[in-house]
Length: 96
Figure 1: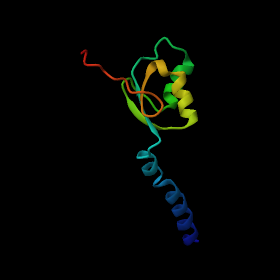
Figure 2 (figure 1 turned 90 degrees about the vertical axis):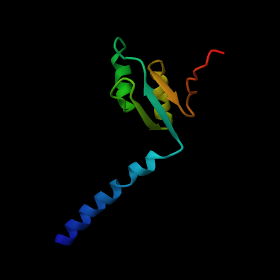
Figure 3 (figure 1 turned 60 degrees about the horizontal axis):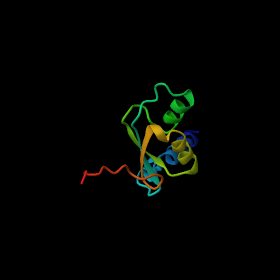
Figure 4 (figure 1 turned 90 degrees about the horizontal axis):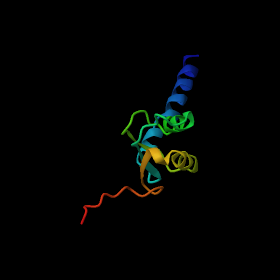
């Protein structure tokens, strides 16, 4: 009976481990930075910001480059800065 418990516990732990490592260094990721406040915007915009994993202003997260995430980024693009394949990085000209 103890063997069955150990097997069941081991299965769940094995499937959860390593997933974060694979997602962390994948080429298909986008770096999203929250740069403008959502105060005064509708609740859907605030919810989309949260769904992208952003919690604080000027926070940067890496999200997978999927159609769902691209759609969320498109909905609140006016509040975000995106670097990676989905959008050009904001280049700062030196003024010359």
